[in-house]
Length: 292
Ligand SMILES: [Zn+2]
Image (cartoon, rainbow, N blue to C red; front, top):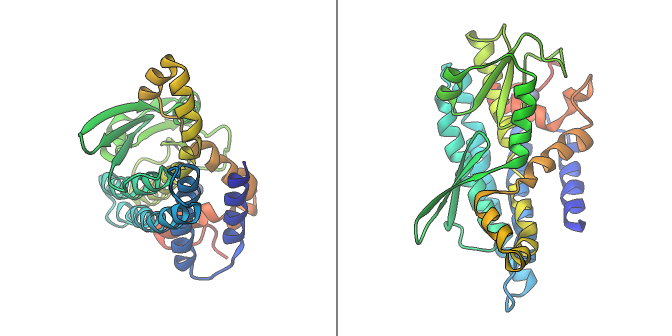
């Protein structure tokens, strides 16, 4: 709990710093989210003979590197907007997931290359090196977010979903936030029927892709619970079996806390000051969330 408070306070301070050019702030945010979550995770998962400050330093440095790749992956979404082509979403996700995997490995205090993941909808495809295994794991919180969008939609656009590798739903009006034309409530999007093509469609799609990544960027936190999970696995064979196929994605809840509490929700003028909105808009189309 203390660690979570520390991350949220740190995130709040970083998000309050004002800058006309958002790029340095965005780079600092992404590298530090990687470094701090990985550093704290590495202390929690430190080996018995390891000193805590050495575990933190190793996790922090590797996490910074992972965070820099996370930033690059987010930024690659500008290609969707610039070239008006959704297939770049597969590329940006691959780069983002590589960085995100490095942060997770550092937080779990294991070799940074030992495990990789790529998410498709609510399924996390997990690759382990040495020996090589591929395991699909179900993400309950991400599934909940997708279910929420399914219930608010009138159709599922499988063609767009395949082109971008990200679930895309449509509706006549986004009932929970009618002023929006696109919304991300998980690893997928809900668009209004008026938005199918043209420059605005690709601009909004690139912006929403960055929100989908924001839902994963705190996944180092998921490894804060490794000692608890290991204990439960030793005690309950049933939980051990279940754990192989289910991945507890607490990073989803961390994003909700970050967006709705620290960033003070999505409404009115607060939207313009919301770091996560500014990051999504700046990296995709080089604009701030609101024109001054
Ligand atoms: Zn947005």
